[in-house]
Image (cartoon, rainbow, N blue to C red):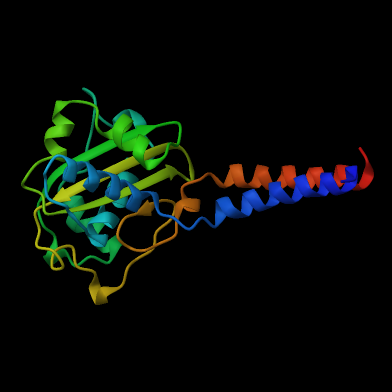
Length: 221
């Protein structure tokens, strides 16, 4: 293989990597629910229904923190007011307010580095006896999960909301229409959205690197 052919091959791989990152065919929020349900099954707990309406609410829950990692957990931890579920979260998700059901538990975590769903589950969300108690509670019947960066980049938030609502009747979407929201992903909506979590800056730099390699190949810089 000549030097020029090898050079263009490397450039093509760089460009392909950037396109793949922007058009990934997976949803990390759905993957998180799968990991969670598999863990519950191992513990002889019931599998929870993956409710898209509740998943969207979980994404809205993340957005309420406005990228402030310091407000998550600890002695200074905060959480959105209950009124926001009816006044803000439900309308933004096209969820009928009359179908909102009680939240029976939540798992929320935030850190500067993006990790895979299984790592987020074991290293960020499940970190003490309280989180295990929430995970295995028999009060839950359904679950919604979300993951989002801040403006598509760091820090990254992971959120799981549990409810005891009736499957297929709670957190119902008006007209049955799923509302896609970015940045971020939420579970249950069949959205290929993992590229929405990755920083667009990273993708841009990958594209730039591929283009630069191509220029070097052409001009021999």
